[in-house]
Image 1 (cartoon, rainbow, N blue to C red):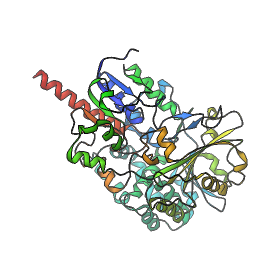
Image 2 (image 1 turned 135 degrees about the vertical axis):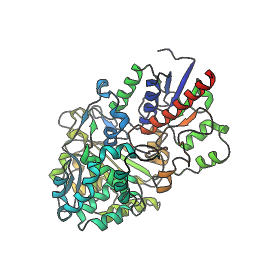
Image 3 (image 1 turned 60 degrees about the vertical axis):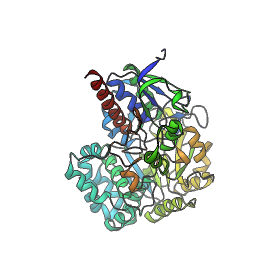
Image 4 (image 1 turned 90 degrees about the horizontal axis):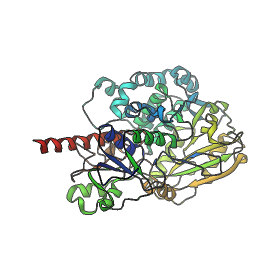
Length: 483
């Protein structure tokens, strides 16, 4: 396809939010071009043979509870463009040192069997949220607004605003439920004594019960490819391998939507912003980094708790106190001795990920921003702790610390995969305090990355809402010209 001389909109970056923005614009009949710096599209939704030929690994995102919960994704015909979701029997496993595990099952009652004495308390916490999930997913995956479902949000908010550690201790008597909830809440990448960390545990737990934690058959790249395929049927265009370093690198356009973080936006736009907005972007805070390990294995991970084989996702850290200590140390600038580790074992459920009889493992932990410490040994030790003999199965490994992650995706500043710190201030003011967080003071310039509401995760809602803001301004400009 020959590139045009001008477009209604250009979108810089082809992550989930960039593609979502482009699709929204193209569906509205606007000529749209996506420009991606890397050779391949997808941003955080990429897959590659990182270890050996025939072993497909997800470069960043792997499991997608928010992908299937996203109101935007649900409205797209992605199944017609090659996307197939796989739902493991259980969304999540959380093993303990005694060789047992708590499973987050689709059934809350079945989950209760794994948390023992806290079964009733767990059900009391999660059942109302699970029943309200359709309402909550619409409210939570949106910028600040007047709630359409205030009662459901009030039920959620009374618990969500609390620190995860305090909530778990007040509601649960045993370590099994506390540990399970801590693993969920630690997706916040915050110390678990911070306000609002409970919200992450509640959202991910309710999503697991309501819809599951699926993975795309063939790798996360399949989600990006399906979005790109659909965009092209709408007339949208995509170019890859073209870094954008300044506004001069863009073709003529009426709106530019940047799927980048505030630091990059300032670098690209130069002196386009002045005063308070520029200072606000410069003061935007990034969170800790990540250290990621991808493994080619000679067989499935040999968990002591055999029920772990029912889940594609496994949280390692056992107790609330251990997980809390790991996350606190990261925020204090220390690498944890016993890191909280997130493991995905996609090949148990997706035979396309590895040669016959072989398997893959995807694992990462949180580390201080920009850390150069090699966490390979500590991550593998944590897995071996719950799966003796695991190390004997390793055929090849790929290690990515914060700097390498940032090279793969420029939005991962210092290894921060969430687009910025998830503390209370930046959950409410992301990236700045504004009635329209996607629009900048420069006419026609928007930010649509996970540094805007509703934040990190593969859901596309940041791009969707940024595109709506751009469409509103384009329409207003046209009406003014016609008048």
